[in-house]
Image 1 (cartoon, one colour):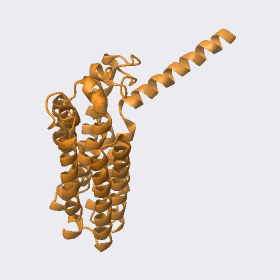
Image 2 (cartoon, rainbow, N blue to C red; image 1 turned 180 degrees about the vertical axis):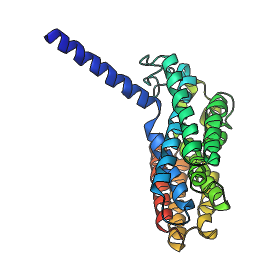
Image 3 (cartoon, rainbow, N blue to C red; image 1 turned 90 degrees about the vertical axis):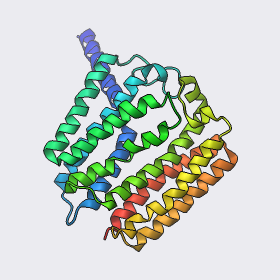
Image 4 (tube, helix red, strand yellow; image 1 turned 180 degrees about the horizontal axis):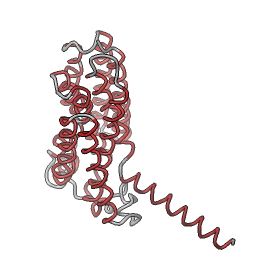
Length: 299
């Protein structure tokens, strides 16, 4: 009896470990941020009282697409992840999942996400979700080993989730929706370039064409970081200009943008890992605070 109990316990632990590995394959922290921005898009597009059921449908479909995209990304980069310190313990390079089961899992949740959005929200939302998947998996991911332009390309699918939410709520896109897209797009550049600087040696081992790898001096990396961060400030004010938010959001966005730039200036001056990490943390605080104030000050 004890032997059988031990076997059952080990089987249960193995199953739980397997589930944890599939969850890790979806990059849950990134998925969480995707859901925040998708909800913001849905909320800001809603003309009256929020349709909570509609928002839930939009978030479910978006979650599956985001998770599927991240999983496919890890499948494609499995061999390269094995060369990098920060990624070598992921489920695929570590051998805890095999490639076939990862592909079946990724394909299943991705298809489900697109079909769910089309069936439960709008055709446009499903189309944008499919475009997000294609851009991220089949264009951005291969480009990472080809050109430093990959960051600019990768920021496009990263900025599409609020459009999924917007389209799910209204079935159309307005200039205000594209303002949200621009904010997300520009925010990502300093965020990812700071990460690239922090892990430039790792990226070099993996063979990725990131700016700090191609230009070890950091001149190009921090120039791009500061220019995109500066552009983010006026674009972040567009929701008020377009009549989507009030003055409280306007001044909050201005202060947040200037503070974000201050972290960027310090990182570009010292070029240390510590200050680059502070910039990453500042970016992680910037976006949700901006979106929360935007929703609270919606006109």
